Structure formats: structure tokens, C-alpha cells
Amino acid sequence: MQTLIKNGTIITEKATIRADLLIGGEKIIQISDTIQTDSSARIFDATGLLVLPGGVDVHVHLDLPMFGTVSSDDHYTGTKAAAFGGTTTVIDFVSQNSDNLLKNVKQLREKAERNAAIDFGLHANITHLSTVVEKAIPSLVKEGITSVKVFTAYNNRLRLLDGEIFKVMRIARDNGILTMLHAENGDVIELLVNEAIAEGHITPEWHSRTRPVWGSVEAVVRGSALSAIANAPLYIVHMNAAGEVDQLEYARKQGLNVMGETCPQYLFFTEEDLKKPDGSKWICSPPVRKEEDQKRLWEGLLTGVIQTIATDHCPFFYDGTKPIVYEDKPIAIPGKELGRNDFTKIPNGLPGVGDRMPVMWTEMVSSGRFSASQFVSLTCANPARIFGMYPQKGTIQIGSDADLVIWDSNLIVNYGVAHSQQRTDYNLYEGWKLRGFPVQVFSRGDLIVDRGNWLGKPGRGKYIHREPFVNQ
Ligand code: URP
Ligand code: ZN
Ligand code: ZN
Image 1 (cartoon, helix red, strand yellow):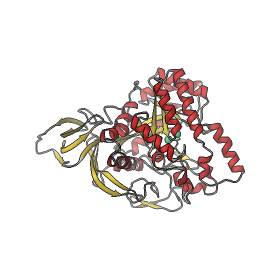
Image 2: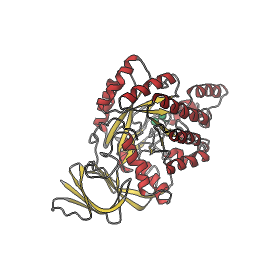
Image 3: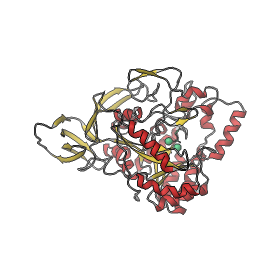
Image 4: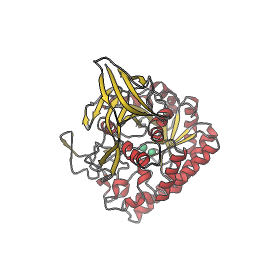
């Protein structure tokens, strides 16, 4: 069956064009001034509306066990929320539950394939290195996993030593795999947390006070230096600090293949939010910082020092003792209240996968600070390209998957938890007036969101077998 989107204004990372667009099956098959079809085609009139590529969020954590609970969006609810916000591809992370990397991949992939409503890929966390793991890393590529994440923080849990990170980078380099870095100083955090607890500090603001900004800055320098010595590409996740942007800019000026991602929470919130009575809602790692950090992150986006905007979507209930109604059924999942008397027990992470596109459009494009093409670059095309999915995803071209969003740039939405589809009991953008919102969302040619109605279903999302990393 063919689907025709008529009279829309198509936005890609390169151009804005007034054209009709024809979908045949799962793909875009024609883009022209005017397209005629036979009477069997479904026709959508996009007069006065934009047609954007579906958003690509390369950093989400779905159904992730943490601190005795689990992130409250699973592969169905999280991908449904993504779709409502105009995102049609996500990449989740495979935890290293054992040294058998392929077994870990298989388990998560099968679970996600049963549940995902939009297409998804996987990164692999490398959190314990052994000769078995070193030998197994290259085998990820034939599974379509061409990125691994390493951590300089979370001592005794996820962190690798510098020498181990260096080893991973070299193996990754030789196999077309991109290394991603969580940049904080694990030793400093461990010491400061122990001191804070011993001194009786229990409130959420101590989460940021024990994760100092200079720890993140030095870890970005350290990661860049290791990448330079290993001659391996590096992608810094969830960049949050002015000094990190400075160091990334320096690394890139030296010609290093180091790239960066930031997330909306670091652009809009500060450590002052952690001091509020409900401050645990803003607990994530690395923490939200200061206004001067926000300013430099925005500058980094504008000048091209930072390449992508993802979410690090990892939601928890604010009060998981009180059920919410989700798809007509009550549900409660233990959440931030677990750390009511101890900030170290507050599950780390925030909701955001459904908020990203409309919030960022409002603040970037509706505000007049960025062009629509810059928005598409940062939220769709660059992430797809860096992570081996372009031009299948992230753009609008003949042959690309028909992952499309008919977007009303004038639609005003009074946003908040009642509007967003993320399965949690709060929204960080409560009361925000958003300008620009998806009207219809297509995933591989299927209409899955139609003016606020859900037409998708669990299991229709496909696993994306990603291509090896190519120097950017
Ligand atoms: O607080 C966060 N970001 N939780 C998810 C884990 C991570 O480090 O990305
Ligand atoms: Zn991280
Ligand atoms: Zn994360």
C-alpha cells in the first residue's frame, strides 16, 4: 500500500523543501513537487505543516534494574512514549551481566523485540574486562552492535580502570566500534559520598555535591587523551559542564575524533532544583550543574562542538508507593522514595524520551535560536550517522525508512505529566508551554500516532543491525 503526504514542508539536516512525499511499504519512494497516485493510496494533507524525520534518541535505559527497583518504562511503554514525542528510533544498553557478551545481547534483544513499538538498536556496556571479554568484543559487530560504553565512575559496580579503557578503545578501533564514555571521577565520588554519609548528610543536593564538576572535566580530558594515544574515536555521553565543552573543543581542535552528546536536563535545570522539597526528581548521574554550564552547553550546540542531543531516559516514579493509571490499569513501581533517608539510595535517572523533540523544538526553533535543519541535525541525522544507521534513519531521502513526523510548528501544548506518555508520576516540564508538537507519527510507513491516538503495538519495532563506525 502507498501513502502520500501532500503539500508539506520537508525538513532535513540540509534543507527545507516544499514537496509531496510518497511512501511505498516501509520506505520513502518519491519526493517531488507534485505526486499523483491511484485511488488506493492513503493521503495525508500536510498543508501548513512540516514533515520531519523521526527523532533518533541514542541514549535510553528501558527496564533497567537499579538499587533494588527497575526503571519504570519498559521496552513497550518507553518506545510508545518516544513515538508520542516524535522519536521513532532509540538505542538501549546491554548490561554486562556476565562475561558472555553475546548471551547478554541475546537476552535483551529478545525481550526488546517482543515489546518495542518502534525500531531500536543496542549498545554494549563493558563493565568488567577479562581476556574472555576482550576476545568477545569484536563479535558484537556481526550482531549489529557497533558501540560500547565504558565508565570512569560507579566504583565497584561499572567502572573500568584507565588501562582497561585504553585496551577497550584499541579493540574497538580495530573492529569499527565506537567507544562511549561516562566521564566522572569514581575515586573522588566514592570518598566524598562516604564522608557525606558519615557526617549525616542525606538530602538530594548531596548527590551533586559529591559528584564535583572538575571530576567530569578531568575525565573528559582523560578520555580524550586515551583516545589520542589509542588513535580511537570517542563519544562522550551526557555532557553536563562548561569545562567539558571547553575540553571537547580543545580535543577536536587537536584533530581528535572525539564527539559529544548532551541531554535536555543539562540545558534547563540546575543543582538548585535538587534543593527543592521534591529534589529527588532531578537526581541523575552526572548531576545537573549551574547556569554557566547551561550557557556553555548551548554554545557548544550552536558552534558544532557538541554533535547530538539524546535523553539518557531512565525514569523512576517520584513516589512509587502510589499507583498511577497506565493503559487503564493501576501500576506502581518503587522509585525515588527509596532514598528518602539517604541520597545514595535514590535511583539515578530521569524521564525524557517523549519530551525531547517538542521541548527542544520549542527552545531551539520556536525561540529563533536555531534553524529547523540544525534541530534535525542534532536530534535525528547526527545521531543516526555517528551510530551507523544513516541514511536508513535520521533523514528524509528516497530509500530511507519512512519514519516521519508530521509536525505542527504552531501548535501550543500546555505540557506536563498528564500530557506526556512516559510511565511515571511526574514530568520535569510540568506547566511548560510548548510551541511545536507532532500531529502524526509514522514508523516504517505505519501510522502509529494519529492526533494523540495510539495505533502502535508491542513487538512491531524492529531491531536495527547497525553498521560499523565510520570516521566523522
Ligand atoms: O542517572 C543516570 N544517568 N542513569 C543512567 C545510567 C547512566 O550512567 O547513564
Ligand atoms: Zn552514563
Ligand atoms: Zn545513561
